[in-house]
Image 1 (cartoon, helix red, strand yellow):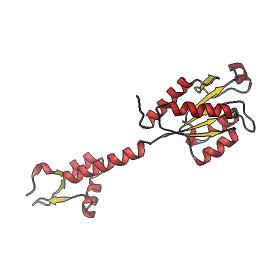
Image 2 (cartoon, helix red, strand yellow):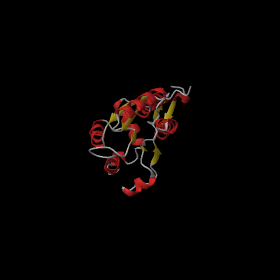
Image 3 (cartoon, one colour):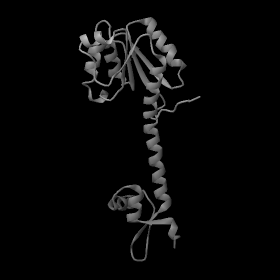
Image 4 (cartoon, one colour):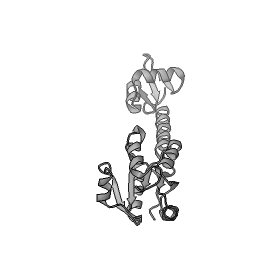
Length: 199
């Protein structure tokens, strides 16, 4: 007879795994978990099998939640400024996949291929400016909660004259506020479970 501590009742195993007792019975019939029956016909579930399922779930959760890097899209029509961003981002102790675009239109094409975790954008740009781009992005369900950070030469009066920006958006004046941007990107990285070197 198996040791009592090595087995759980069907209801106990169901509670531990967060499933219905019928699911446990189904798993037992399919051989997914090891089962022993008492003389009275009651199922006893192998605790080792239950622990193995819990470990598999934990591993799968870590793989899905812990990204290797955070994707950052920077949108600015000035090539020199984009180069400055690249140099600045490389100095951060954050694993980042960086994408750049020179207009809102180019940014939308990039976003269609790779949804970024954070967007940093200028406002005054050719083809499609930052105002138009932000307006379009906020209409997309999958991007409603994506942080969009504005770095612009426009002052608050000029921004308001052009219709303003969504409430709660981070807005900074140029030159590029490196420390502020790093702090915001770091916060989003931690929220997404990206491993960060804090040294």
